[in-house]
Length: 158
Image (tube, rainbow, N blue to C red; front, side, top):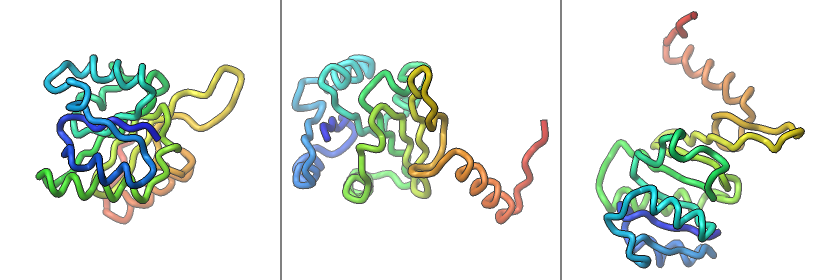
């Protein structure tokens, strides 16, 4: 996989992730430090590189809709710190087949992975929308409903 690490992730991740058969570059490598997010996204798109970031702006689906880029993985961690984030990102990349997220907007937190997939091409059926990685939308919905009941939460009726 071709991956670009955003400036808010440790540059030391590059060598550790390269060892996992990924082609890694950083925003620092390409002189993109402190450049607008739209420029970083544009460079990722032109190079065909998936972006790994902590920057919440990349989670804005209006600016970066699924299918308009090679993939964006946004990490939202409850504990901050460069070492914690680096370990979390490295573990995620090591344990996850990133090919499943090509063209997707992915938000990874301490407890779950949320995936917004691009719509299927015209005339084809396929998964789209938001759901957990490797789950159909129906399975995801049923699991979320069960989790809510287990936690004693009631869904608001419209």
